[in-house]
Amino acid sequence: MSHSPSLKEKVRQLPDRPGVYLMKDRLGRIIYVGKAKSLKRRVSSYFQPSRAFMRQQPKVQAMIGLIAEFDTIEVKSEPEALLLEGKLIKQWRPRYNTDFTDDKRFLLVRVDLAEELPRFRLTRIKKDDRSRYFGPFAHSGLLRKTLARMRQQFGILLADATPQRLPDGTWRLYDDAREEIYRVAGAISTEEYRRRVDDACAFLEGKSREWLETLRAEMSDAAARQAFEKAAELRDVVFALEETLAKTRRFERTDPTRPDGTGAALQTLQQELKLPAPPRTMECFDISHISGTFVVASMVHFADGKPDKDQYRRFQIKSFIGNDDFRAMEEVVGRRYRRLAEEGRPFPDLVVIDGGAGQVAAALKAFLALELTPPPLIGLAKKQETIIFPDERAPLQLPLTHPGLQLLQRLRDEAHRFANTYNASLRSRKIRESVLDDLSGLGAKRKAALLAHFGSIERLRAADVAAIREVPGFGPQLAAELHAFLAERKA
Image 1 (cartoon, rainbow, N blue to C red):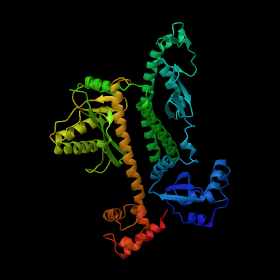
Image 2 (image 1 turned 90 degrees about the horizontal axis):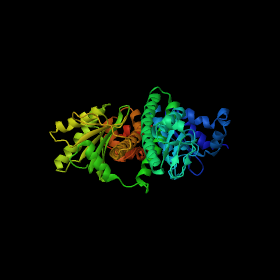
Image 3 (image 1 turned 90 degrees about the vertical axis):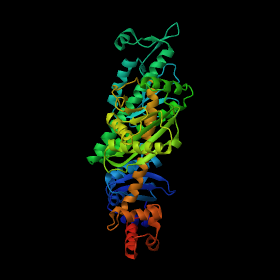
Image 4 (image 1 turned 60 degrees about the horizontal axis):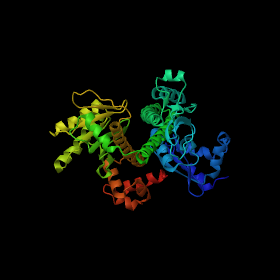
């Protein structure tokens, strides 16, 4: 397929700057999203016959033949391009971004709960069924070792098992040798085996969260080393694992076969945390940032063990600039409960901090600085799901199957999701607005005035010189310079 002269002219006008490009077909559908260190060089490579190596790949050749239009978005750096590319792939799920939109490269663990004796199987395809899925996992060797260890620890069945039904209706899971090795009963009832499955699923979900944090750290490190292909691969695994964990939590909340144990969970929390009453209202705080930038915080509110989204709050950090989780936690906790105290509103029955001893101390410091009596306060440290107290009590580690701990995990995970969503929206807006940073003579006040007047960069791009002159601080010369500047960088 030959491309139109207007499309080739548009390619020639692209800037030699980092960004993201969106390839579209003749119906305007986005078929591919890519990132580039130089938009000009990268996008032009799709339209140069000399790039035969690209056309030798059937998938690329098919995509090139469908390109009828493209859009580009400029950013300030390759790491920003990497993050924006992932966000847009998740949003549009283009057909040719197969590395991310399907998980066939990576292994998942599938547990079919419809089986009488659910087994833990490896698969590369996630189906829309009532099974539980864990993963995807990029390190298959580590995953297989983990499953082997889980079989010994929990006494579960893997794909190669051949259990036998006994005359009394129970099951013999293993032969005598394996029963001795695993040190768990080999002959049990279906109900007893189901409890083993629940324990193993809880462990595997906790392991998934642990691996997720490791992958995030590896992704950030790869981006810092400018190993962007590796960072992009890790980002895809992170996004897919986050999505699977979110689906798993939704399954647990909606599964009709599971009884509602919220009341019991609240009672067990009262006992374990030595609270005066079950914590019917709980609030959790989380700090979110990327290498010290776009630092935000979230607070979520649960009533009777369920999210009360009308009470959710989000915060931008105001007291400092930089990367300091402790100062950020002190600030947002202080802002939240100073307002409640001023308005005469009750404090929650329990405050949960996403973090360890340092974050808990920072939250407590906020109450002391305001001379407010703090409500019961704990931290939930991710690595071992350890409960941290602000007093002399030793850290508490509950079993992963403990209903009270699982409720705290849901609260913490919701705060984390809410903070990350807010962070992503701010980051996306900042990326769009960053084009203004490159125009000399345009300070912070004038940029703020532009965005307040037009509402978005898109509307500013569409404005003529006369409309820009209506903004305070913009005379004829500066308005004309800005109009020309945006025209040159128009996506």
